[in-house]
Image 1 (cartoon, rainbow, N blue to C red):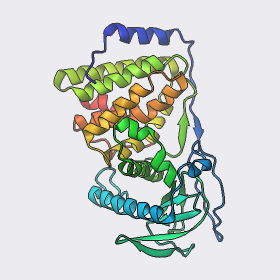
Image 2: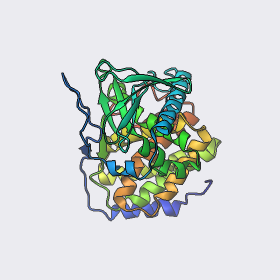
Image 3: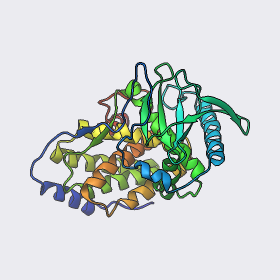
Image 4: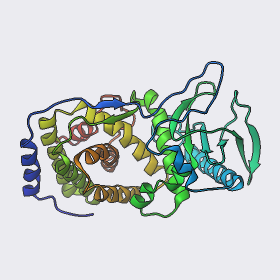
Length: 341
């Protein structure tokens, strides 16, 4: 991971940006997480459009006993993670209603009782879960039927067989990775009340900026691999590269929203399930994985990776940042001001 970001490489990236015509623009908001609020009647036959469509549920068959054992183990582990956190990470508890479902079986398992569905309480390996039958698709945020509390639905097949997290984290432990996936969406459920951020964001301006983004991510990774003056120099490089890009694209506010919405979710996903060092390794692997992607893919991935990296760099300097996030927060600016750069 330890590498040198040469001045020539930095100026090459800046020069490539200057070849772009002066352009600005907003990110187009995409409501990836849909709230379903029903006043009197709860019917869950809706197939929500998502990149991981419902057909994936049939690619990895499972019987009901295995499914309930998986759900019970996940709920017990989530409870232990949330209890151990005690609200320390974000200032609010992570405890949330969670429903795991399998469309192949048309069965669901919840970690809490509901007041509408009349789910059946069963005990699996000493863990209480609540079960019923329904057909859903994955994953989305849901409000109710827990007295309006925000929770999540998520597919067994999605959390177990979406391979990216395992590759990036360098682990074959699918159970741990599944916990991370669930906590990613738990954070999405918390974001509207916590920081005023909700939904997904896509960059409207992305042509020609991939090299600049990759250099910024490399500089942040170098900051996490070093200390002292070398760490400070890497941070200066990252902020310099970022500023050069922003002066051309005009993307300030909306770039920040992408990092807040997805970056803080990835940060939560990683640090609730992996050590800090393994989290850094996962992000380094992810950065390497996108190095050959097109401009749009790199620009989107930047929100996920860059947001989490800025959070980890802020942590490395022992800067308190998680309690001051609002919708217009700029993580890089917090870093710059606290380090007086």
